[in-house]
Amino acid sequence: MDLWTAFILGLAGSLHCAGMCGPLALALPTPDHRLTPLLAGRLAYNAGRVVTYCLLGLLFGLLGKVFAVAGLQQTLSIALGVALLLGLFLSPKLVRWFPITRTVNALKHRMAGLLRQRSFTALTVLGLLNGLLPCGLVYVACAGAAATGDLLKGAEYMAVFGIGTVPMMLAISLSGSLVPIRIRLKLTKAVPVAVGLLAALLILRGMSLGIPYVSPNLSGDKPASCCHE
Image (cartoon, rainbow, N blue to C red; front, side, top):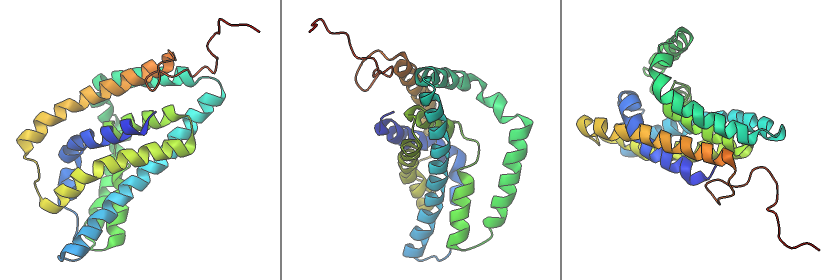
């Protein structure tokens, strides 16, 4: 997958992040009320999120590599696209699944303790844990990382995705309310559209139609030539 899709997904999807993780960003502890330490603390929090995304990218990149070695990269790409489309309709039910709610509650309990600490270490760990919270947008990016079929490329894809979310999250944590809730609610309706577009790209990529950037040839077969020696 091209890295621009990761950045656009992160940048556009950060409106979704603003609604879901905005309250946490506003509640972050402040090591020092001066501007420089305040900004450094918020950057530490966001750096923690990006590091977790990179680790997820390694994991899903490895998964993609296993499928690629087995000659199933096209199948994986199509399956991921279909899974994203199904996720648009099933995600509310998955959120209420007991194992997920139990994990989320454990993470929130740990994060609540860190919110009472005023240190850069606590902010970084908060970011690391925040990256593990269930988030449909992150799962979409993980699908893109798996489609790269490589560990390092998967980590790179997730890093660019995470960087794309930083401007909005950083602005909210510093300004308090950069975008009014009414506008955020309207703009987050565009998130399913972005998910649908990425799902379509994954399916087209798996079809290996030989279209540059959109559906490259993944089979490794060279186009037939009309000239014979």
